[in-house]
Length: 103
Image (cartoon, rainbow, N blue to C red; front, side, top):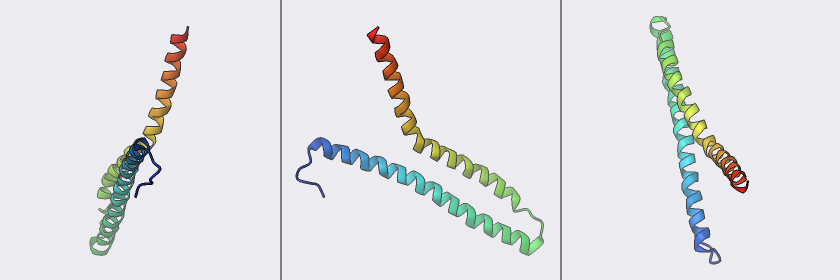
């Protein structure tokens, strides 16, 4: 629903913000789904390992998949924080270029 008093530029900004918000939510949900599947599958492997042969083989998939999950978490966090970092770096670079041009 759009407000009658909004300008086309405001609507375009709102659309861009909604698109960015959707992308960020999808990244977070992707990681949370990955985490949930990791916990469920590795919990089941732990139970199978301990109930059937007590060989403790469940650690191998746990550590391998855990590494992948950790990398997914780092990439997700960096992507979410990266936009802010990019903006700060861009602002600092523009400031330095403007100061250099003013000399």
